[in-house]
Image (cartoon, rainbow, N blue to C red; front, side, top):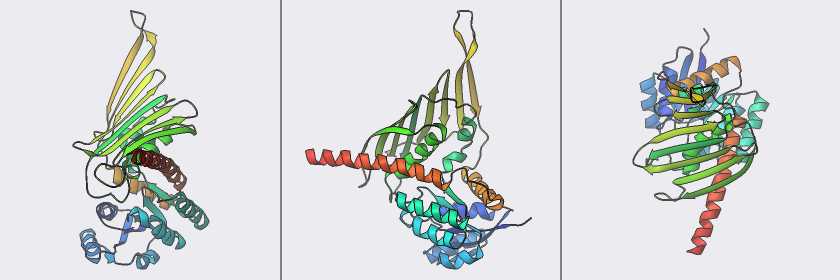
Length: 320
């Protein structure tokens, strides 16, 4: 069996897990890991039995594919260098800092016939995977992603840090263009937005209400979907899905009978599933579940939300 030669660029908090997962895969040859922090690169390389690189450019000629797990502001530059060398990429979310950067990556990947997969890991949550067979025509969606404060990941505001996960999932299950977006958000412990709410109204009439926060004392990650004759509830953390739907048969009182389905999904490492899917896409030259175009769409909606929040907060500051 031919092994796919893979590297990891950026081995900080998340990147080191990418490296460890790849190192354990029989179908992968983890050629090396790169990080500007030489000591960190050497430490992770030692743990994973591979070679450290301080300059990722030296790694690129030796690999077919890479995970790019550097700070978001560097995504475009690093990804462009990889694509220029014909290297397939798994690019962590958010895809880029601007839509223009995203467009350049999509065009470059197409020109070089490279895989461009965006790391929206929640798509690989088994509860989300199971959700697909029960979604029909969502009318109202309510999403809560509430996290305890962590000092890392603050190079982007809470919309790009957390809400973009929910935006991506909602866009994947609502087959309609967006009609309008209404937002509110405020900074609390950082200079960027820490709590935000967005109400997205689609042209087909579906409304999605998304709330995110990164200054809670507990973690909550839930999604609820209301649609004709059924209600779906996902707990991302517990990996459970509850479905309540009405049967066509009536009960003795002449009312519709209710069917309740509780699914506790088998434990699955979402990151490992995502990386295995990436390796499969590289090997089979197949389109990723989260392509560059889908990553760009999620970014576009996130940026519109951020722009509205900033405009609203600017008005608030003027009043004060």
